[in-house]
Image (cartoon, rainbow, N blue to C red; front, side, top):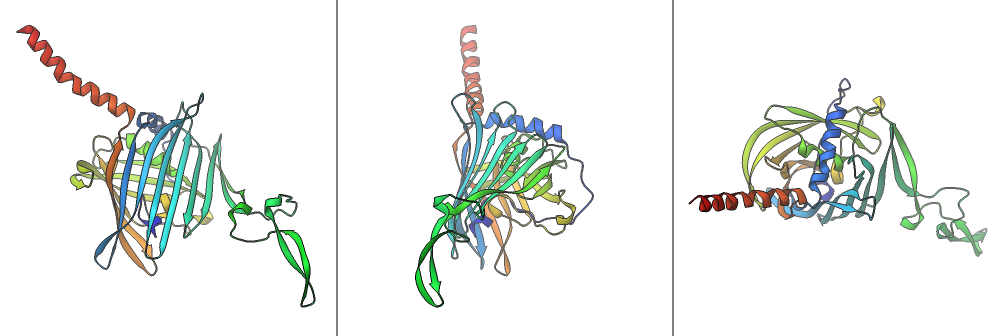
Length: 335
């Protein structure tokens, strides 16, 4: 349930002609992610059930540098919570090239009511989708994958033998298996990298940008259209925002374009509106709907706290704060 209320969500649009993606523009936006290193923000997620807004969890987004020599830029989004019999703990992580900020790997891990481990590996000209599945290799000799099986003579148990486990929920029996290879001739990003890269795009009212995504077996072109400016208030304070809408189009396997529904970060889906801070493009508020049982629930995600600003933002603020003091000092000397 909580997967449906923590960040971006959309519903797939009908299949159309393949859109033209602007790879160079996207790559330019990606390179600006390094300016967000040091940022950490927190959100609260709510759903509306029977006219009552119920908080279902929290999520945290951060941008850090890791590594001794080759300092990778790491984007992280974590979520936890639960309601209505559903529990969730999830971690999404993208590791980027320190020079270009182009993604190297994207990993999603979820536990709670549902468990899954997925990964995207970005290589030249292709993106490999792998997922943890139960090991079924007939040649596997890993002792951790072996179990005791009772032997019978007719209905009578006669002892036991060691065999390779064929199916269970023990995650130690799971291994990374290739599921699909995307052969691409243009720039595609994972959801988390795209979310941060889009923040540097120029979003004047009435204009649009196209963000190319790879999500599991599918490739999507998300058209982000700026609608209007609004002043809104959330737990983190008051913000002048640009309201944007998102329209997804499946541009991957033609046979899957009318079958697959778009799922955003942590499994959210449904029509979505996002309010971005006009100055920093930080997502301040997200609203939409989510499927639950046989109904759709309205969902609402809002910025709760800016824990730390990016190193670049701190530096810019310190310079701005110093300007009035310098001017005052100059005036004193003139007198």
